[in-house]
Amino acid sequence: MRRPLPRLLLSLAFILAIAIAAPAQEHFRGDRAYDYAREFVAIGPRWCLGPGHAKAEAFLRAQFRHDNLEEDAFTANTVIGPVPMRNFIVRFPGRKNGIIVLATHYETNYPLRNISFVGANDGGSTTGLLIEMANELRARMTGGKLEGESVWLVFFDGEEAFQSWQGDDHTYGSRHLAAKWAQDGTLPRIRAFLLTDMLGDKDLDVMQDTTSTQWLSDLVGQAARITGYGRYFYKQQGAEGDDHDPFLERGVPSVDIIDSDYGPHTMAMPDGYHHTAQDTMDKISPHSLTIAGDVLLESIHLLNQR
Image (cartoon, rainbow, N blue to C red; front, side, top):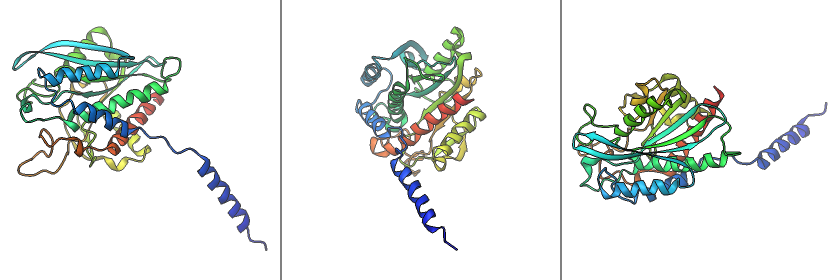
């Protein structure tokens, strides 16, 4: 009886040839997101009313000068008095009627304005992430539109508290925009609001936020598993007050994609690097931003399939 080994070897050789010829899977360019974050963070502290804040606004304006950019300027009544703020909204239209919002905040903490707090992870990393996401979206447009839902990138101002996170002394920009969109009829068109926060952490461990919309949180977890990054997501759970809250309160499906476990927790730094002068570029990585970008893109894909 003739052994089928040669045929098996030929089959294996054919499969190997296909695998070699097939293009490698393209990943989100976390290296470029990191470079954007590094350039942005080099501005220095970006607290409201400070000189770095105006530079941060100019930086964002320059990144999207050829896009459909809206500057949502307003004055917030804060615990330290009236403060001018500015949200940035970048619209990439789609062929479907719905909107998927990807958001971050870009300013730094006002109470830490005197300690050279640059917020490399807290605001900087996800600002770089969404700037590079804009490059991805531009590349996917045909005839000036995305194939699925419209995707809007939002850069919030005033997420940080001026004195304390107790009460309403925080999320000024997101509360303003949620109210504005409720009045002009935008909110019902938003199919999903995905907030990104502190996703550059070298030791990435994205928490499952228990305040988020369950089905949307599950969808992000599914996207993480599909892209092969499930081990970086949802090993722990917790509740975060963040810029998704004003949208949740108005019935918009919303998820906070956040790694709040940032750096070693010590007596001197009980919250790790968070809100310390140690939140610097050496604590974040292009690889973590690649993971975040891949999961966001897959989340958009899954949302368009629903």
